[in-house]
Image (cartoon, rainbow, N blue to C red; front, side, top):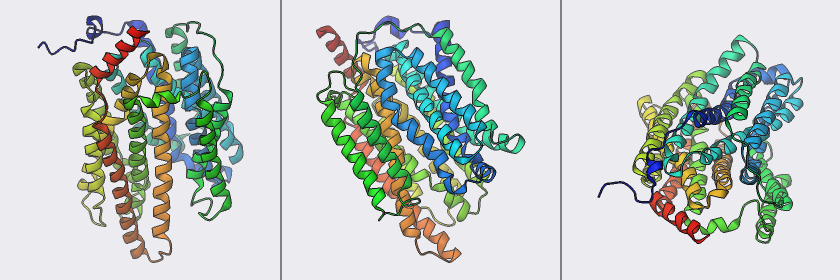
Length: 487
């Protein structure tokens, strides 16, 4: 045995990026960096924005507006990228993001800022999903793991830089510059995309799935809003809250019924017949719940129980990001070298489960090295799973639908995180209700987080079980070759 996989052509084993492909990859990384950094750079400026625009009551909507539009547009970008090519679509996303950024910096009141953040989110969602899918247009599938790992590292690096850059800009310039700073980066990405990406080929005639798009966007919007306002904005006994849920579920039901009959559906339901595709999106949902649903409340423990400053509590999360950054690169290189990926989501889910189980033993005097060690472990687990599940979904379906595969995995992970934050927030609010004394307050925060971490660990354990049923790269490549031969 030579150790080489027989389904991999020799030219793919020796693959190297030429100068044009390197320029395209730089443009992709710039786009991803732009969208990822914006998700964290704004967080440190929120208190200053609230004071300046006198909009403390509406402050959560600055985040919710971006989250809502960036989530609901993902399937549309994925489908249009497959049909129309990704060059002009990516340029359009950059332009929308830049327009939203510039207008956000110019906002004169909180309502304007919320609207402009929504515009920015439409561009940001397109940046992420179109840029990640564009990798498949010029990098062979057998070598994609290495470059997907670099994408994960870029995402982690942008997340790492965001809070510090936001704090520096607010302290030295103005909160408006956290939006203006996007403009030069975006212009650079726009120019490189225009120069490096080839003109998309003319595709066959297509029919826009208008009703499917409307129903899916309505359903996703209602569910994201339900998750965002349940508890802190609308009481759980509010009729409006449950009307949102009913609207979301009803729209999803209509979407699934309609998609079965449309000749070119926005999300072909037949893809869910592919075992690995279905598992990839499901595991992404579980990972999103486990990651965001649990870690989002850790700063409360650090600040209210351990009396860390907001800056120091943010620094603690660097342990998670360093682990994710390192493992994203390492896992990507190993997958390209060995042409196997299945062990990574399996081991990643194990590490996530162990780290969350470790954090579920949190106490008021837990040594900080225990918490830091658990965060590093969690980061390593996430680095083994997040981009790998994108790759497995892409491999499971025909190449011409890679945009749909990418957007679906990203959508499920985002929805998992959103619903996880809402659900764990409900648990947190319910257990903290009626607490008055400071001593009882700290003890109850610890008890609540223990519960949240245990619930999150159960989701990651479910991901571990599901990961065993993923098909590995050689099996999926052979199936793809067989499908192409039949065609």
